[in-house]
Length: 381
Image (cartoon, rainbow, N blue to C red; front, side):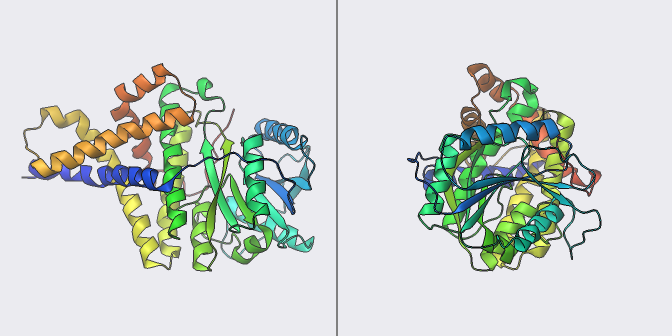
């Protein structure tokens, strides 16, 4: 009897990939090109790091200065890091004192909150200052700089997200983890789609543009290791609109299976924490559905291996639905490979190894309780 209904675990992930393609069809373009116009406001490029990837941050600063040096505008690069970490960066370094305490925030959120208070002391949390959040390895291209400046100059939403691709050092990463990271760019279709309807379940902590006065009002003092996601949700609860700025930031795929497990488990645990923080029943339900789909992805991937050995039938309507979900699952990875600048061989491997990739991607969510409750930092090359 149980075997006859085991196909039901396929339904949540199949539904998610159908939903993802609806987002793709209805959200429009993720990337646009704009002409350069001098920004009317100041831009602070903020890299928040714990210092474990110092050489990577150094490269990011160098790349950022190279891009910005082509244009005349008011900007600063801030590196926010904890006391005891390296501070010899070619940028303005903001050190978070070891005795600094918040009401709730820990780990990266604590550093982000300190940066808000640091700017407050400098009287920089104003409407004419924008913070552009970046990760250790984020590469800001000319296209991205022009896009965020366009957003600023046209007085659009005070918070805006953009696409992140993972083509930086894509060829230097092992096959399975870089293919697993090809599902991430298609997820940006969902993010952009949800900004239209004021119902976000997540934001990226990188390629995130926030007006300084708004960031102060929202703050980062959350009890969550997925602080970027809850920041977007709290912004909506406070009445702020979140937009899309159409700029692309290039980052690195996860370098190892161990790092991928730590990262994905952190995201899933943070999602659970965020459900407790969310006030909106609509967003709470959407987030819950997303987490269930991710959690059920692992047993679904297992079933693809044992399916030939099981003697059970699937109702016809369910076969059509699951077939559609599976096709869109395959296409999602193919789309991600395009954004990550993969080649034909990687497209083929993505199809051949998809069940294995599915296990790798979803196992951290299914086994998140085995991971650390701390903010696990992913190493970058």
